[in-house]
Length: 430
Image 1 (cartoon, helix red, strand yellow):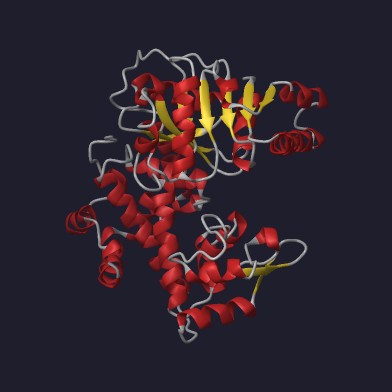
Image 2 (image 1 turned 180 degrees about the vertical axis):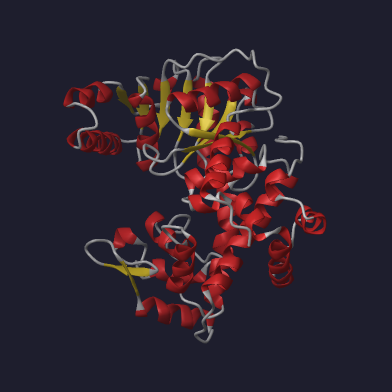
């Protein structure tokens, strides 16, 4: 394995972060749309966190919920977040009031009519989002930017509900949205240049790190995450335990492994009682009301300090469902099985022109998913281990599951000895 120096890694990360702001093909003199007011649909964890970014930057926010109770609850959480920051001495008490004064809580989407930008932040349900965008198309003033915070759904399908698809864009914030730096800006098929330019400019104003990506399931970040999660689940089916997999990913440098992360997010995301999904272990745990940290039990048991403790109950559930004998695997092998598919998926994203450049993929993973900085990002790490090593593992995993077949470009790199970070497929195409 090639081990670059700290200086080389730091220089790469710095250059990658700078390059992510550059959008080839976007005219430098593109006139920005003026954003003086923002509307947010949904005052839950995501909506409230997104709204805070704008209120903090001095931009008034109208936030809409379906009930007064949900609205009050959301604004109470926002106030609590600001209050905690003030208590820690980050800003004076009167700044808490100044920021809260920028919020206007409402119960009707029509209250957003005069906003310059509206961001939909309801839960991941295509029918609901289609309904909301049909309504937004009806009530919003001409020239308003209509954004969705979807983390994986098809934005072209959402935009098709409007007569102005050129005004529609994805603004995918990461949770907690008031803390996490990354903003995936998703350019849809018809998104206008000035909407892209305005969104990139706004990302800087609200102190985010932006990466412009294209429409595909999961976009860049989650699409790569899904590849890792599928392989982690396959390891359980082979007799490993969640804590074995997480320990290996922790040793790689991730603060949280796949199953620790699932417990934090909540196992019941995308699940409902009685559901039979393609993840029967998760289904079984949810039926037992083991839904993650919030219920003090998920893949792990949790003590009062939310420390994860391996669970005999979960071990029995996994054995019952998979029928697999307990097995062990070296941390290095677990890392290869979970990390190399991420590199392969990133190459497929580049082949499909859904990212501007390889370093943008690294920016996404460094700033949105806790990728260890000393390994530079999936593409940078790919160069550390070499394309041939990645290909050897993907040949094996692809033989087990065609969804993990090696990308053609990965084969080409292995043959030519080329670098992942130097892949050039011509940038983003919608």
